[in-house]
Image 1 (cartoon, rainbow, N blue to C red):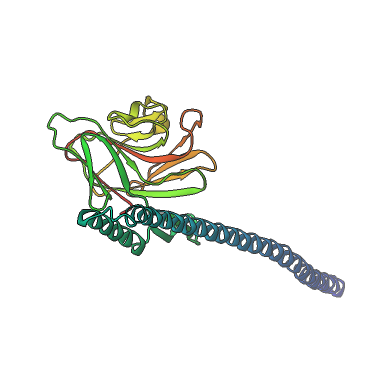
Image 2: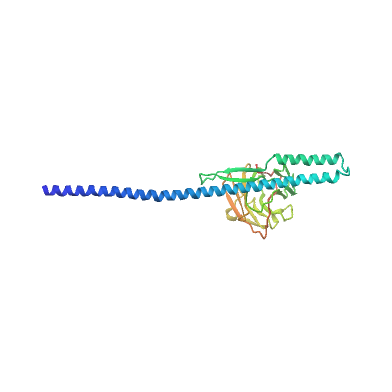
Length: 301
């Protein structure tokens, strides 16, 4: 009986010894685990901070480039008016009509200078807890060809009144050759059976009413159509023309990687096109084509 009790006692003591060893082992393992994962977290922190700093640096550079470009453009426009005055003033070769024209140009310049076309915005990314930051230079519509017109300080593109429908091209003012640019288009109104096109076109391409036939036309349209260098593809990469009134379409021009992307903020649908520079050389311009009378598209709302 005593022998059995002694044996049990020894087993309990061995068990207690194992528990103490396991406790020490657990402490060592957890210390090593903490050190390993802390190093991983530290590396992630360093990498994340570096990425944020790089993004911030790029945003500052973009901002500086846009401001310098704006200043050069404003100074150039001022010098043009000064040259006209200097050419006519010495010989008194001007009258009230010339003065009225110069004043009108000056008023337009004042309005342009006082109203900044540059914005810095954070964009919420669903898969990230840190918002991205983007520097954007506001674009406006500038040129038209065919049955279309622009109004409201060149921010609204509209189709003319034509019951049977007809094509009309609209281009933006800005030229894009480098960097990443985000332009938003708001659908203010669409025909019940809508067809409209949005995308890019090369500045070197002559304007024409049916501009989607141009080799440098790249973008998306109604009827599930995608256009690349003048060719139409249906349902390319699963594209569907799911558009409603008040939809906002974000058009991203990535000149660095020679791609364009569209994001429908309502439907969250997103599509991308690779741009062949042999067909669509830089600089690129924003490019719309409207067909139906009720179509109205606003740029950078």
